[in-house]
Amino acid sequence: MKTITIIFMFLFAGNNIHAQEVQPKNVPSIIINALQLKFPKAGDVVWELEKGLYKAEFEIGRLEYEVWLDYSGKVKRWKQDFDKEQLPDAVKLSIRKSFDGFVPSSVERLQEGRSVFYKMRLTKSKEKHKVLFTENGKLLSDQVL
Image (tube, rainbow, N blue to C red; front, side, top):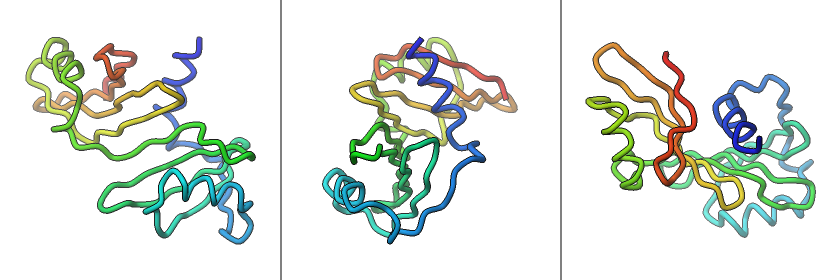
């Protein structure tokens, strides 16, 4: 059941219409400090309150990040843009086996606790899929676009 919750959360996290922007001065210091400890190079952070979690959006270099923290400052989950060339070999192999000829794009690395996932679009000619893999290459979700 937890896997299904994680899949749903990552596939539709960008579609949340209930998020409320929060001014940095209104974010508790424990949360700001926790973010700075985990991501010391985060700059120009935009804060939102989303389903009881503080969500921080920022860039480090050219990579975009989103991090969700609870009221105690604990990082609950986070995602970042990811270079398709750095995908784990198990994910690359799974793409070749299940989606022969498809090319990944818009790759994101997602983490909740110790679990790591890779969300991406796969394209071949006019065919498109939105997929979610575990770091071990297990396909968890395949949505035809």
